[in-house]
Amino acid sequence: MNNLKGKVAVVTGGSRDIGRAISVRLAAEGAKVCINYCHCPQKAQETLDIIRRAGGEAILVKADVTKAADVRFLFEETAKAFGPRIDILVNNAGGIIGRKKIQEQDEDWYYTLMDLNFKSCWLCTRDVLPYMKEGGSIINVSSQAARDGGGPGSSVYACGKAAMLCHTRAMAKELGPQGIRVNAVCPGMINTYFHDTFTAPEGREALHRSAPLRREGEASEVAGLVCFLAGDAAPYVTGTGVDINGGCLFS
Image (cartoon, rainbow, N blue to C red; front, side):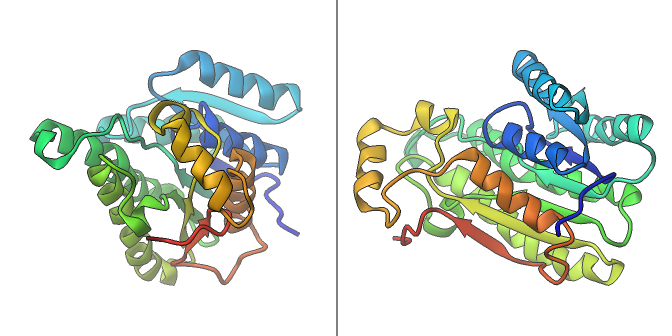
């Protein structure tokens, strides 16, 4: 059993791809879901429609989770809709933006990527705590890049995701005595807009040949892992970074 019925969940970056799959799966398992988005209102509405057509309960909240005021607004709106308790936070917002070698990177590039991939996680974790009680669960969507340094031109993205993984372990120690579990998932090559945009076709084909399972993963598979970590089926699991990459070895 993995009972999420009646629980309240916030998914940052929940409008498409992995975030959409997580939002839809949480709602299907009975959670009330706040779908956070920033730049994709149409995609966010599509995600909301999917949930509502299936009989689920969800709302949309536009917020830039790299900004403290927006993060506070996100949780305030969730509390207005569903009550003062938030049971599940999924820190999914993030992105690679583009690929640049280190000699091409400037400070704006660094701060943009670190804010998006780590500061957002730090802010949301900090500011959800007044709403999260014993039994709460925080899941951070990190990346295989946090393990292996990422592909060409993605060094700062990889560092942001690695910081998220370290923060997962630190928060598991800090919040464990309050009965709050903190875990991370580390997806490898997942069939999403991310890789459609930023990964060359030959790189994806090479993975198909070399991965033990001979394929990319699907967003729904990441969502299944997130929901397992969020619910009653994993009550003694905290501080972990669970790889979901089809068995690919790190290099």
